[in-house]
Length: 258
View 1 (spheres, rainbow, N blue to C red):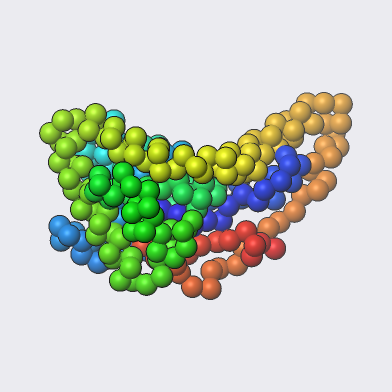
View 2: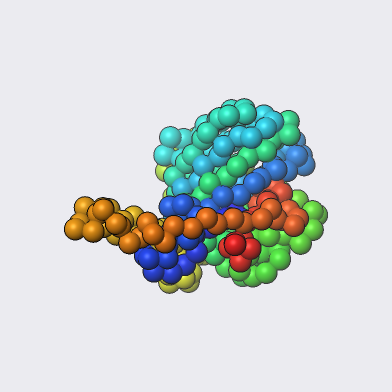
């Protein structure tokens, strides 16, 4: 799941201008299109570096997961909050108008490829084939260009996911290791970019908080310089939703911040 109001890059002194804590926030209306197994919902995928959280705004549904805990189903109802760490394969099911507020760690990393779809192994093992099926708008982005393209990509991911789920049910979490290996190979060329995004976002945000604590504890604590530069920021509502992996995304972009 990607799309964001994310942290602006920059030094620790300017990190506070981005979204809190180097996170990203997205509005998500989960697809209600029936999948290959008849269940309506989004694409199954895994993040390699970013934790993801779901806050349910309306509707009902569930998220299916494959992790070190094996296979599980987590019901979703208004007010529920569920999150999962990197390495958790997840699939959203939407039988009833499911709308989420999604919070992602490491703002910018998901858009830069920290989301690998659970395509069948023969596609995951071939970077060119994977890219041709996964990137339906631009080679480095996850947004689809049409509903049919999003459906086709979703269905292929569910095909691979269902076989993977059967393997986990039969053999336990060790069955996830080939997926992790294939996913790591697919993203290996992006790690330098990910490091830059990490430093500009979450690391800068943590450094900014550290600086503020130091000022509060220091000789200038009665007049902390950082507090005198307090500002308010706003990002206007998106003009239109995008077709993401799991549903229609209300994506809040930093270039609209004012």
